Image (cartoon, rainbow, N blue to C red; front, side):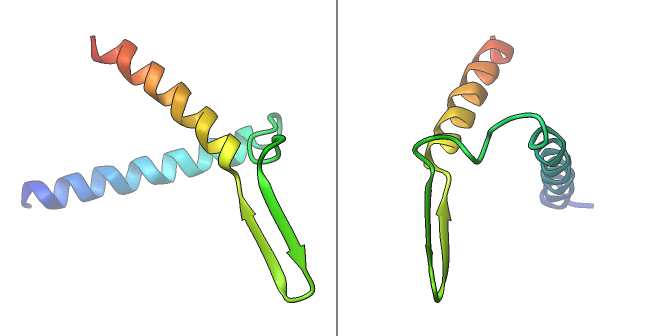
Length: 70
C-alpha cells in the first residue's frame, strides 16, 4: 500500500473517531448551540453556521496541539 493510501485510511479513522466524540459530547455540552452561532430559518429552508463553536474548537485544538508538539 502506498503512503498516501495509509494516510487516507488514518485520516478516515480519525474523522470517524471525531464524529463519535462529537455525538457523545453534544449530549452534555452546548457546542453547536452557543450564543453567536448563526441560525436562520425561513419557510423555504434553514441555514446554520456555528461560527462561535468553530472558533472555540479551533482555539482548544491549537492549544492542545501546541502542548503535545513540544
